[in-house]
Length: 589
Image (cartoon, rainbow, N blue to C red):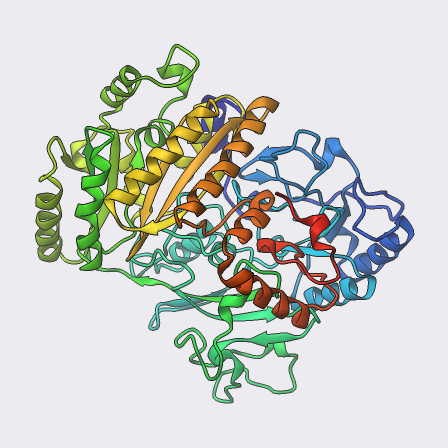
């Protein structure tokens, strides 16, 4: 990964459009040999499979991963690899490598690919776009799997309903795409989207991984409504109200193929429909490929103001979280706010070598110098208020008064700070405007790549301080800098620790992996479980959710084996292995 100056120039030069998240397939010949074959598949069988894939999708929409130089390039966020984890954890680059990539153009092609996978018993790994950076990107858990790139060709905003404040999307629609659609259709002053830190990810993909954003609509799975899914046998289903045909809809014709039939008028309005609610089993799982997703959009609240609160001391975290909890429960903090460590913020503004002249652990003097340079505290809280002027004014006063009970706390609005500042960036994020600015923290060190460690805990000052102290000690013990943020939900907080290391330093890579493995075990001993993780850690984390002799895993495996008896769809996802795999041989611990 390049230094910060190169990233800045790339961001300035890069045109964010449809070409930004597709990868032009080279000319293909059927005699190419993949770097890694699928398990239990010889070359002849693989080529027979690929002949049928080419016939289904066209040679321009599939390619064999046969060249390290061409296909195992690290790339960067907006030109990401579709074939392996570009933030790879193993120096030999032979793990989590795809045998081929196929890019279907429509739902029938997705169904055909799934049926071919069953016919040849070849595992497939569906992705939306592949920008799940820090969690494995586009890489498959089972080396040699065929990556199904849903986002290259299936990237349409299918519908935006202004009255219902909802939309229906295909997998390749990014946050930037959806925002641009609203702008192009002059809807951005009526409807807002919710965005994560970076705008280039798939709206559908982030929701299915249960990711978060930062407006009042920040719980993305909570804000979804209705799915269309290709099951592991190739059958198409719609969940919720989508399961009910609606003869009143324009274009209704029962003779049309199922994927072309208009959805029920309430499909994006009421999540549950009738009977068991199934949407959750298609998140973080290998039980289906979601081809359409409904999402709720946020009506323009009539006003908005972002703010930040800075805290002088590391130990202020405990008191600050205690202030946050009642405000969040009472919805006086209406959005998903964040409490960010000083280096998380500083790394977006400068590299380590620009700020610190020595190698090794950061000192108290270093932190004070960085804080003074960028007008930051040791912890920096970012939130927003929404609504007309009178409502915002009252809410801001309540919030400000509560935080200023902590000695040394400083409350600022955007106009109080000079640019560049993190509050100026969050001012956009907190009102649903996608940005790429926070990509720059990867350049805190040269060739920066990262792992995310993401445990869950109650909103408690004591628990926050304990989690922070444990995480910082283990990260620093590995010779790395602590970079973290607490993202506060209604009753819990995600502690997102960014374990940043030099991709060209095998020692740092190994230390980063050892550190996160140690963190998983220590946090499990404290009752803190991760909500999301990297491919290499899925088995370990799944093993910590082991109540009643792993009864949840047995249930997940039973569902997997019933729905996907050939084990072709994302085997090993979230640590769930189909019975046709020898689990003991595949588990990574």
